[in-house]
Length: 384
Ligand SMILES: *Cc1c(COP(=O)(O)O)cnc(C)c1O
Image (cartoon, rainbow, N blue to C red; front, side, top):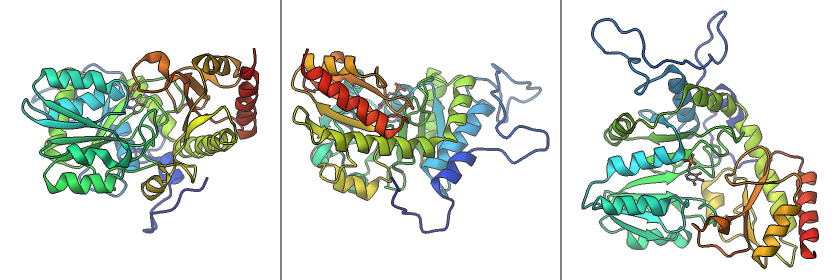
């Protein structure tokens, strides 16, 4: 699909930015993207100052990756800081636990990532009041009063509801509430939360950002120096830092982000279009489908609609047979990889979904092969 072009400034396009993001100035005989720097400590005679002192605080391979992610999440924006983490959860926890104190109020989505309920328990144990409301219909607005921090996940995983980020940010900022957006599903080429007004864009780099299903990573991008200093301090205290190899693999993978995102988005739309004609499929959701309840808001704030499609088959057994019958779609969790995956989400017990609910992540296969595999598996799973 072609992304609607919101950028009229003559700035480079997504593909150009993706292949060049975070690269150092060319130096004769040096590689384009220098390899991972494996270092627990650095030579440091005299006063312990300067960028590289100890490996839990800084690493040149992280610096380049952080620069790259910042260029994709907030192009042309000054004063933005990016911090890389060991995983998406490390990044999410760093924002929540560094910004909130006992007595504060936090608003989380009721239908967000399946680990959020555990986070909620921990926040509550520390004396923080946590309120939740669904993502759809901007319902979080109804519980925002007096909150210190609003956490948004749009599109939500796995339900694929979308909320109006600009509208929520306006209400939050009017009362001094910080806003963080989980940008995992969209990726920075799908949506740029800071451009929509958010204070933080937080994501798992484990999914489509890196796209090969071979590493865990997370990041926080923020526009406010004070809150970001607290996030950096939290990273140092907790030490949930990415390994240099993971950081380097992630940076290498960013070069193909636009290619992957375009192909996987197109494939997701093709799968969704094929599924909508099937009588055994209910609750089909894909924000890129014009008739989807999320589409109108998604089209206003997203530039690509992501690679995840969700739908429900009549029974748990039918869903299991469907997954078993797929040949080029792996039965696996996670999403965003170049190889398509699908799973019966109810097997984890964490999401409020029907037993037959399937979350499918479209990979980079040829669309006709992927659609054919899905339709054949639906046919084969009908009878046994
Ligand atoms: C996977 C995921 C996370 C957690 O990321 P990890 O890298 O697995 O820690 C957070 N939010 C969303 C929306 C996710 O899909």
